Length: 201
Image (cartoon, rainbow, N blue to C red; front, side, top):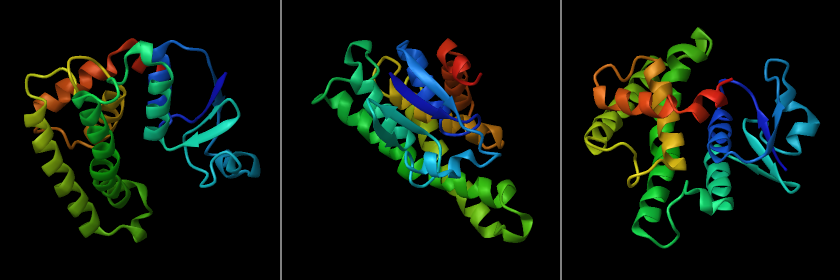
């Protein structure tokens, strides 16, 4: 059985959401980050950087939330949470997964760190502004891209929507989607799914 190492309000919610969508057995292993359980020698053997999340599948450790999603979606192809390999939809799926992690999340993370997360003495206002501007530029593009579409790839929900909706919801929580009604509607549709609600419990 797969084991998901999980802490609330971390990127571990993403693989938990997909596992709940799949409806397959898995073991949830709570990790108390406030007690620094993610920095223990035991956990560092699973994730050498001591971050969330990590997954053990048949004794093999996998980390990075998007990598876990890609693996788990492919492990159960009959469930349809990843387009078929070799198709144009599969290429677009990879595109958006990489875009989310490499292009979309870093400026949001910078804005979060330098506007609220870091101690005030360590915050750099210019970094927060640059992150906000970059994320806003991305949101403008996505607002247009998602117009008239329910999902980011094709006509059905995929693992790419898990990542996209999770990151956009993070941005919404910091007030960055106020000018983007289409993105707010997209997020609301995805996070209202029963599996998404269970992943937050």
